[in-house]
Length: 174
Image (cartoon, rainbow, N blue to C red; front, side, top):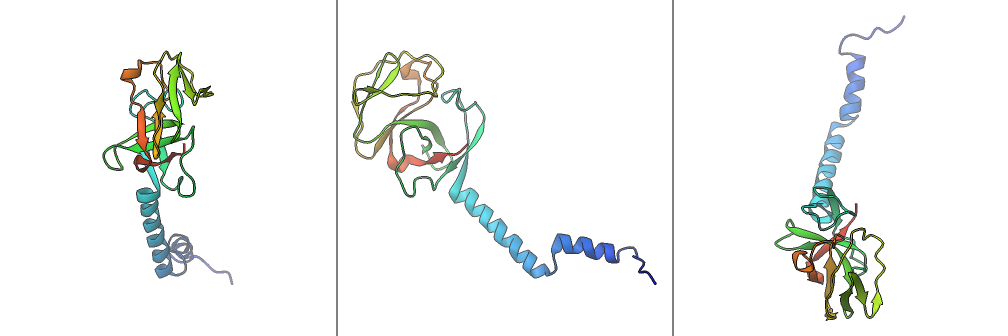
C-alpha cells in the first residue's frame, strides 16, 4: 500500500532538515562560526568607506560605498596609483585618496601635471582639467603623497598632501 503524507508529517521533516539540518547542534555551531567570522572580517579585514565629496570624481562617485582591505599591505608596501583609506581620527573617519608619490621621491605640479623626479607621471584616470603649479617637494622616508582624482578645483581648496605609512589603513577594493 502507498504511504500517505499527513499534515506536518513527511513534508515537515523535509523542511526541517533543510532549515536546521540533520543535526541541530552542528547547524548551530556552523551558524555561530559564520557569525563570528563575518564579524571579524567586517571589523578587522574589510572596512566600508563612503565617499563624501567630489575629490575622487570621476573615478569614484559621491556617496558611493567601497571597501578598504586592511590586509592589502601585509606583504608589500603601498604602491603608486593605489587608492587608499587614510585614517584621520580613528578607523571610521578617513580620507580616500590616490598615492602618486612614494618615499624618497621629489614631486611637483607643472601645468597641472604631476612630475615625479623630473618625469611627468602618466595618470589616465584624470578626466578633468587641472592648473596646479607647485615647487618641488621632497617626500620623506615613511611618507606618501596622496591626492584625489578631481583636480579641477584650486590647489589650496583640495585636500591632499603627505600621509605617513601608519595612517594608511589599506587599499580600496571596489
